[in-house]
Length: 180
Image (tube, rainbow, N blue to C red; front, side, top):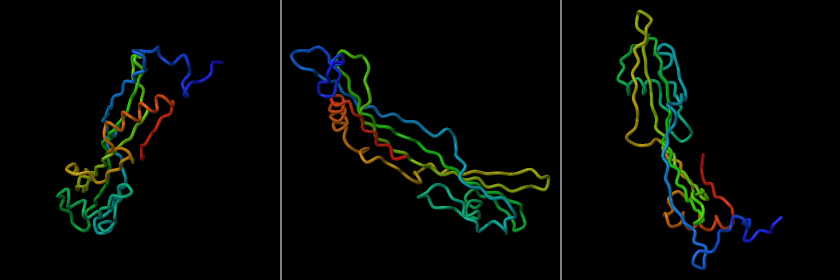
């Protein structure tokens, strides 16, 4: 078995180019989102019996009472009206990656990655009509994230990601900094 040189298998070390081993680096940011809304909590009953119940979202996002949800969706109900309220969460996720490659390789490999998630809250309120069908209304709070979760290194400059990728290509190690 061949010995490793600086943690790299000899067959992976490219031939010298102009007397040195240049390493190419790039920074890539990928954006994705949750696959729809995730139901967090719900309550059904007469308005008088459930109005004061607090429905949660996720840790760190303040709960909303049923009465607040019905008000937020502009749904007028009486005390004996059969009602429902639901809370949902969604997110947009960013992954910032430092990638590197040797000049004789065609594709880049990720060596350092950090991430950020912006969580958004959504609510649904409903009332049951006399024909037993529901009238529902929703509200999406998209103007500002309800919660932001960020990796320790997410806000580092691109030069930091490139240098980390270069160093980690040489050592064969990765740094994954996703806080979820």
